[in-house]
Image 1 (tube, each protein chain N blue to C red):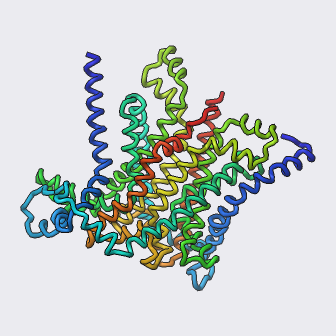
Image 2: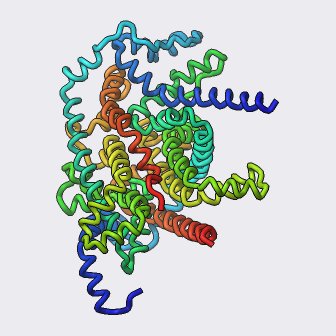
Image 3: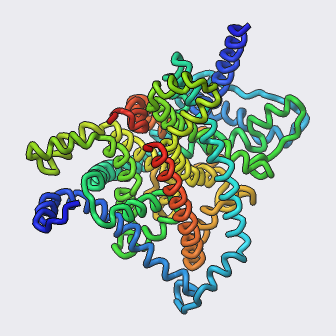
Amino acid sequence: MKINSKKAIKTVLIVIFFIATLIYISPLIITILNSFMTEREINENYALIKTIFEPDKKYIDFKLIPNPVSLEQYKKLLIETPVYLKSFWNSVIITVPIIIGQVVVSALGAYGFTVLEFKFKRVLFFMYIVVMLLPLQVTLLPNYIVAEFLHIKESYLAIILPAIFNPLGVFLLYQHMKLVPKSYLEAAQIDGANHLETFFYVVLPNVTGGIASLAILTFIEYWNLIDQGIIFITDRSKEPLSLFLAGMGESQLGLSFAASTFYATPILIVFFYCHDYLKIGIQTSGLKE
Amino acid sequence: MNNNNLESVRKLRKNKTAYLMLSASLLGFLFFYIIPYFISMFYAFVDNPLSKSFVGLINYRDLFNNKYFLRGLKNTIIFMCISIPLNMIISLGLAMICNKIKVFSKYLNLVFLIPLAIPSATTAFFWKQVFSLNGFLNKFLGIFNFEAVDWLNSKYSMYIMVFIFLWKNIGYNMILFIAGLNNIPKSYYECAQLEGASRWQQFRIVTLTYLVPTFFLVFIMTFINSFKVFKEIYILTGDNPHENIYILQHFMNNMFMSLNYPKLVSSISILITVIVSLIIVMFIFEGRVSKNLSE
């Protein structure tokens, strides 16, 4: 009897997970599949007109598999819409410096927080946490004031510079560095290593997971930026892909599926390739005292 | 610990490099966040950014009579009170299941992380197709002769926001919890079993107690991510969504766009006060628990 109930629970769990999986991957799958349809197929799929003129018709005539598979949308996107490729490039110019800057600055900063004991350390770290918790809309005004002060309001620097000093990186890496056994640090000190050496040879090798996950999280965050762009980017030709795509709207439905797929690809590649890193990084469990 | 002056000077010199390493982050942080914030605080006490005449606390009084601010505040609080605990409970549950059934867990992890990898615009676009007037959901319900509803503009819109938030963020928390669970030594459970604790008691006494540091981290990350739901909602519904999903960020964003800095800054300072008190409470709570643990 007991075995039976265990089996039943297992079946229920499998069914639940199956449904969850479906919900989780369907946005991706449907977007990719739709991107290979022709404009006409898509219009049939998403037509508004039907509901107006044939209100009685109850239907699920939604087509999932493109037939025939067509590269029409991609052709339109990559060859006939130069502004699209431009915005892809804009995204790259914004994201790459942020990732590099954020990782370097945060790693150094977190190291400082780990090894130093000074008067206002706790207060300072508390401030980091508070700023980290605030929604972007709150930090946008300070960012805007600084951008005005530095006369960089119209340039990407207005987004890049504050992003580099985002306190989240210091917080996350500090969580990782805290777990590096104190004895390692002491041993390095006794052997006469200075702080830079300790940082490079003792601490960094032990927090690679944290660094990787910070880099990935930063990449996801800024590849995806919306909020800052609304404020700082007024020129459409300077929009990064995320904003460009968000502004595409229903009028170019087919095109936006292809654009979405194309746009998601870098993240998905990074993601599937580095997924184990991300996990290790998030977990902070690689080390035990 | 060391009161010897010479010793501390030597220590300072030795630590100079470390201070330098910290300074990059620190200066940037102060320059881009803290100092301009205090400068901006000045707007909270003037009537408008141009004339700059001092009005005292009138902006705060106006804010608490402002329909949109109150609506945003109310919805943000409701949203957080529903979605954060729900997210933590579901992800803890899933993490425990994943820990039990070792077979699929790797694959499950990956699946639950997928939403993090899909860009907001794509996500929002997909959910729009699901919830719009002639979206999948209405088509599906149409089979059972339900009337079509414009979900995002209905009284159900808050649930949709919660759903999208959960969908996107459960995977991340799951991983945090799995790590936390794995860090609890197995011997504690054996010990509890020997003492005759039931499953539920084991969960309550061992799991929950030793997960407190993890809860702390998960809560912070969920809190941050709960503000980020604005991205999807903004793409889905624009500046002025249905009144049930008009959150604080809509208000702030609109104030920013209309250059209404006094209102913006005073609402910001209120939010910061709330968050600071929340974190202080959390720190006290965490400090107490970890003190109990170490005793």
